[in-house]
Image (tube, rainbow, N blue to C red; front, side):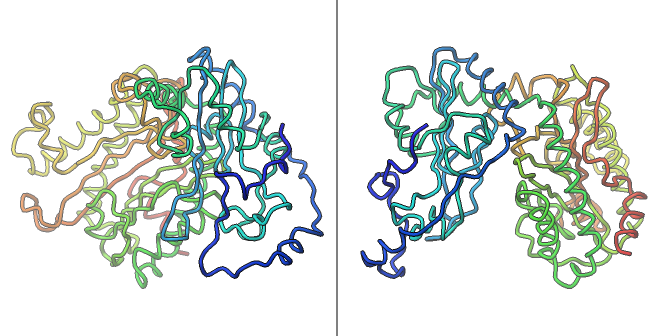
Length: 478
């Protein structure tokens, strides 16, 4: 392990001071005074529970690419506007294979050995700790030292400034691209090999281990609390609109987790028919429904993804309940189709079969349900719009770089976690549906673990049926 104080971040090309034009100038006397008289100590950190799981994952990854150097950056800060950054969130693949969540770190796996190159806390021999807006301890807080990261994650950790020299050494190198422009520039790209690396790293996350399942369960449990908070504050939402709901859920996510796993969708009234309505600027009107698609990201970055469609005044109208019951029946069929060895698309087909026949009963289809379900037609999808499932884990749409044969065209296996989320959406300007249906959108979504026996609903503590939802809302409002 290298000595953190050997490298001066002010002279390293990667570590120029981040200051702004409006910052006061600093005299040499002030600089010398600020560098003197500070106590310092290493924190004694216990091993992170992810350490043994991450070590096993790195071993499997190394075995997939024997004799090669594998590079997985964490990424760096992203600009929100001018000189303000978004709160940092480490890259999913990087975190999966080592557990690190600090910015600007890079994991290198070679010959079965792993080294994490990290940017540690500022040394007191430079101005960085009191002047740098992005990394300075007095500006943004204390970063862990190299030893602290090593103790926590069970990895050899070296200073990030040693990375360039390491990557210049001869050897076949694969890089997880698009995460760090600095790292991308250090190694000449090989598009085919790098894409294959990303594919394997993604496919390894398809089946969750016991630690990951526990993390997802925790995220779902906190998400249930967030939905309950919202149900108890709908009267305030009527006053302040969709943003009140967004803020209410966000408070729970930040208080008990790391963040929200994705921008919350709060669709009151006809906004529910826009699949990814994240503006959340509309009104909440009694007598209408509100579609809530929200998920808490836990402290170790695993996220829930849950949707409920609630009657704003606590009770579904007869039409709302009829349509809600149809979506609920479709979701029940979809969850029932989740079993090991079944196609990934089994839940989608089961749910669509129910919805298509329901649309036929509502006399909306221009043909029979069977004709509409034929792949050569699919006209029922005018009102269903999207697929029913996606994988879930560290990303809300997890394992996105996996090969189709392993994912969309693959089969379910014990330990996979996927959503089941059918919906019906009747646009406000759709002249092919009765006027009273226009502007109604309903989706019900839960997070389903594939078990040896079939399926377990990780978000099942949140009521789903119309009667259960009404009873739950009444209790939450009291």
